[in-house]
Length: 195
Image (cartoon, rainbow, N blue to C red; front, top):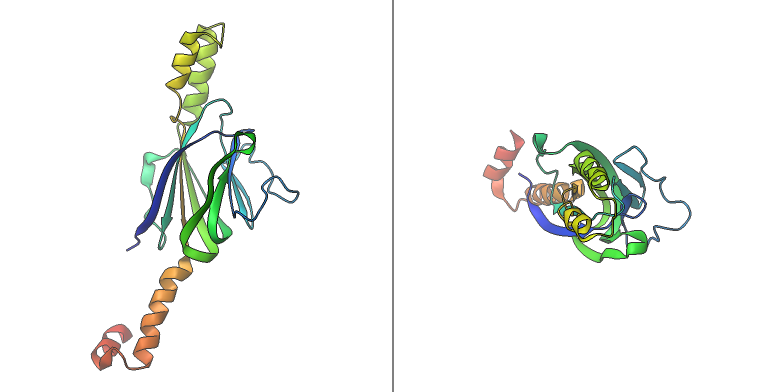
């Protein structure tokens, strides 16, 4: 059974309708990055994962989780799902473009290697629709009423990003097999695992 090793819940301000998860040594604005995720939930290359949002002016809620193996599926609680892989050197950063860095150099228990990633999104269309309705009700977007209603939309669009390294669990099982072959667990354990 998989175990969650880390959970981080933060507000993120998408720039150009996206935020970026990447190895801290990578400049997400350098040439060679993924294409913007227009019409898609994610866009990736080897060291970057760009998550597409439908917002530019409203903060979204991000839950980032690291697991020791593939977590159980989240079921029907999310509207969209995407899967990918990313190479990280034991840390990750979350960039919001001109809005700054939400997380810089978060240390991962999985260390250096390829991580499987599952991204879930919820309430994207709902927030977009409700934000457009604000402009129908209030002619002045600088008015107090508009700004108060806009604050109620903050964090309503939400994302769950889960990442894990398959080799972690495989490495632990490999250690058990190595112990068995050296005779450290005894013949009874060898028989149980051989079945």
